[in-house]
Each structure stands twice: as structure tokens, then as C-alpha cells.
Image (cartoon, rainbow, N blue to C red; front, side, top):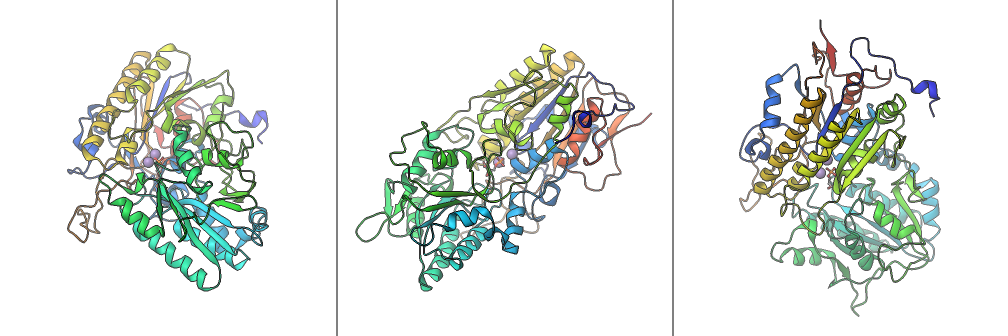
Length: 557
Ligand SMILES: O=C(O)[C@H](O)COP(=O)(O)O
Ligand SMILES: [Mn+2]
Ligand SMILES: [Mn+2]
């Protein structure tokens, strides 16, 4: 914990204090070649387009994936959690994916308190794994699950049940079948070794279990019914058959598969979670696990009728909320992100407003503040959440709440009550994930209109804007071969990309309040999202702490 005096930031030698700064994060807005699969290019986005004229001095590109945001490798696309962590913290932290890799490689994960706790159930009860089944690396990874299963089997687990959530969002739609086959083959090997290991239930991630920020508890309930009660509208003898069959329904896709349970010859669910069992949720990322974790852990719980609340030994792959200590037990300690820019600025009197709609609200608050919920100082901060639509896929309403976010930001700017007005505009990302190209174009247009609204307000108060993004998504909606051409599948069909990308993201600065001579430096090797915090601190008139990644700007006479 820093002492009060340690929070004091030095004055910037050249830049003044007191400017209103709009800090806009366009979720899922990368920079890519202009072609028909680049929805940002194909949408009318005059506000964002005009910024490019300022290149290289006031518009440039920064890295938003791989090691620049603390992920294991350069093949890892960026995501909201690591992106907003880097943006807000100004430093690069080894993130959940990497911390789990390290703990699994050394085997330390199996020596920790969390694993010891769940292993007390191995002798007499089942060990359940619940999580997202893919190699997307955003929330979880299949290879990590297989290592957990192996390690548990070697350490005495006799009865293992896996509750899978199919992806199609961080990976190609349709890839679920292959992942289930891989898991099935692995479990079959364990069965040969005398371990009773099976998939017990499943469903698509967006329809079963993995909701976030309390947008729709029904999603979590569907998962509960299948995983804990062993009840679901669809019953199958094995999971490969389940996924293949459910995918044949018109309009079906991996993200939204209905819940199913695996049953034995007598029609009985093979793996409901019961008293005495152990449960490990193998997602390392927090946002989509918190609601499920509450259902598993909280004695008092009113979000839906759990029917049965089994007494289990539960551990998360990570602790998903450090404030709530949720879950209480976990296998790997999450990154300890401290001294974020938000906390510093509040200590230095910067009054802050943050806003997004529900599906991204935690991104611009919780993730931004180093995975910390709530205010640092409620007198100086106001966070506003606009309720998202729920129960729909966002291609149905691609404008989402962009204009409402724009309006709230505008009002906050014009109120004169805030020095920093920070928003996340979700459209490019949330609609990009649906793979619906036409809707994503509409989404990008709406995001740009919100940006324009904020620019106009900044113009009026003679403020400064900083616009950037957390990672790519809408700028490329098709899978590509090594040469960058759209890749076709075995049947010659285009493969629509629902996931994020490895592309860089734009960052632009401007507005009447931007001091003369401020421009982007050209001497930084590969600047990334973590360089933004120091930049924003400078624009507020402060020098960033010495251990922050360097600022992106310089002031030339
Ligand atoms: O959770 C999701 O929606 C995706 O897996 C990642 O998207 P995000 O990182 O932009 O939230
Ligand atoms: Mn994002
Ligand atoms: Mn996303």
C-alpha cells in the first residue's frame, strides 16, 4: 500500500492542469486493410476517419495483443480484460492465462491450498470441472483443462465430470465439435486407466452459464439446472453427438447451443453436482465467472431458485473478485494490479466519470481499476451503468446503447463537474462477435456517432479527447490464410471470424484544450495499451510514476 505522500504525482513541466479530458475506448476497434470484411471501413465513420489526418503526430497505432498486454505469446489476441487492465494500470502484468501456464508447467498448482482443498473430495466423491471449452485463450484454454484433469487423476481423483460450455466466440463457429472430440479422447484414456471420467453436461457459452455483470441471470440458471440438478431440455448419451445434433437446428451456433445433459442407459444424468463433490471452474478470466461463482458459493442467494444447494468444495482457477473474495478458494493467485492510474488521479484531485452499458460496464470500471470494484473516492467519482438489452444477440439491435452512452458522457462533460469522462463504447466488439457483417457495419456507425457527440461536447468546454480501443474485432470479420486472403473451409465456404484479432488499435488525441506542440513520440519501439495511462496523466498535467510504461506524447516548442 502506498503512503498518502507516495500518491502525489509531480506536476508536468509543460502541460497544464484543469482540462476536461474525454477518454473513449471503442471496444473491438482495430486497424486493418480496407476490404469488404472490414466493417469499420465499410461503415460511415466520419468522426474516427477524420482523426487519421493527424497521423503521425496526433493519430497512431498501438499494440493490443500478445506480450504487450501480458498474454503468453504473440499468437494471443487481445481481449477486454487484459486490454482495460493495461490501459488503466499503465504497466504490463502477467495475466491469468500466463500465470496458469506457469503454475501448471511447474506443477505448483497441485501443491497449493486450493487444489489441496478440492482434493479432499477425491476419495469418496466426484470432481467436476466447469468452463469454456476452446483454445481461444481469452477465458480459458483446453490444454490447461487437460493438464488439470491429468494432474487430478494422478493425485487420486477417481470420478471426474466435465461440464462444457461451447465457444464459437473466441474461436470459429463450428469448432466446438473438434474440441469436444479432443476432450472425449482424453477422457477415454483416463477411463482405460480405471478412472470414471465423462462429460456430464453442456451448452453454448452465451446461453448457458457465462453471462456477465448481471445482465441476465436466466443464463446462469440454465447452467445450474444442467450442472447441479442434472436437468436440461436435451438429453444425450454422449457429448459429441449432443453438439453435432444441436448444431443442426436452424440458426444454431456454438455460442448459443441449448443446455443438455449426458444420461446413462437408464436415462439418468451421469453427473449432477451433489453434496461432498468438488468443483473447479477452469476459466481464468473473471467477468463471466462471477455470477456462477456466487451461485456456487453463497449460502444466501436470491437470483434464482437453486432448488438444491449442494455442500461442495469449490475452487476457481483464479479468484474472480478480490474484493468479494470470490471464490474463497482458488488454484492460482490472480495478478496483483496495484497503483492504477485511476487511483493515482483520484488522489491528485482528478474528478472522474465513467460510463458504459451493462455488458461493458465492468470493463471501464472494474478492469480499468485493476480488477477492483467500487469507487476509490466516492466524492470525486461517479460511475454510470446504462442497462443493456438482454435475452438477444446484439446483431438484432446493433446500435446498442451507444447514443445513450454518448449522451451521458456529453452531459458529464458539459456539467463541469468532472476532469476525466471515460467511456467504453461496445458496439464494434459485441456485434462483431455475432459474425453478422451487415449488423456490424451498423454497429460501427453508431459507435462513431457517439464519438462525434463526445467530440462536440469537448469542443464546447475547450477540452481534450483521447480515443483508442482495447483490441481488434470489427475491422476483420473473416478468417485469413497466411497470405492474408480470406480462408475457405473444406467445403469452399468463407469462414466468418467472430473473435477478436491480432491487429493494432488506433489512438488519437485532440481537441481545443490540447496544448500547442503536443504530439506522439516517434522514438518508442512498440508502444502498446500500457503506454496510454502515462499519456493521460500527462494530459491531466501530471508526470506518471517512474515505473509506468512511458508516455506516448512529447511537447515540442
Ligand atoms: O467474453 C466475451 O464476450 C469474449 O470472449 C471476449 O470479449 P471481450 O474481451 O471484448 O469482453
Ligand atoms: Mn473488448
Ligand atoms: Mn469481445
